[in-house]
Length: 274
Length: 274
Image (cartoon, rainbow over all chains, first blue to last red; front, top):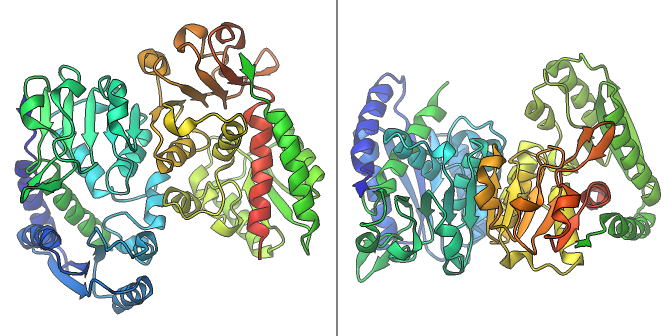
């Protein structure tokens, strides 16, 4: 089994972006809206800051208390948009469960929506008119291209139908006219489908859920899920049991994650274009 | 094999819509933008007019010559929108190949987009915030519900990844968290996947493409494709060869088609709401 090294590709991509950013007339700025204070969220933001430093992109965080209401947060976001100081704005997910997430995401104008999560940005992407890709889909495409995996002719099965992984990956592969299956829930009942997959992309956040007996020989595994298990960040793929069957694995950490951050910053530079 | 009678359900739905429309303060109006003059397109419009008559919805067609440019058509559409006389506006598809279809569709404001085809309407639907469903997806949902087919627990395979069938059906089933596979092109290379499907929905427009040997015993077949063959409108499903294997078939004509028109008019009444 060959490991798809997202970290290495991300570093090269960030270096390319740094060159590109150096030619800009104005330093781009990423606004990050943060609700509450959680160690996992703090580590996500630290990763983005570190990558942004490498590209010389400014990061400004906008903190709000964990008990902010949806309406207050939407108002705060309108102010941030109205200020006009950011090239792009993202909402650090997940948000607390009492927040109406899509309503908040929709406050970001598409021309600043580097994460492609507002209804308008999703619509532009779904209809083939977006200048940028949803970061996870862009990261996976970059990985597959880099290792010359001809995914357009392969059958991809995506575990999870959420806004960050399943939906954007499905929309992307539909546009490529590549066969794609999305399994939303109860993936355990769908072992027969998963076993037919040439490529398995998982974004369900269930520790080591995909095991060797669930995949076919030579499968390409892309881990886009992460969860905490005994204080450690672990992916959806059970590395030890898939190792003898899979041909490729993009692991957690070091696979899709760092490339997702790099694509987010690539998107920011695209949005910065006059 | 039981035939799913879309025509009968559509008639009942239209009668219900007529009752609803009778209570409206103003007669709703559907604007239909038509480019060129083609017998197939004329028959599509006649079907919509007939159904609209049954509901007492006014239909106004806006004809343009077949050689109109994208920019001229977009300008024409802006005028029609600006007039403000229609409850909803649709573009009769297909458009001539020289037209930038999505650019034209995007000129329809989401609050008048009864076909859910503009980027903004697609984005609203994809993010779960649309008050209406894309007509083909709504028609298929209505059919399955009517015959009490528990599609949420079944694996649906969609042939075709286009804007009218594959994309909206995939987005709908993803939101339902139902397992769905979309096969964009070269469906013939994907026989192994099609044979695993509990439900096959086809929207590729290839006469009698799906044959008995391609499906599993007891499959539910939804024909959402149509093409012309020897002067006759035929569907994607080869009725004679699937008859002994399939459990259900929504045929062409009389299945998805009439219900699609009924859902379009249902959408119009929803958009008419104050």
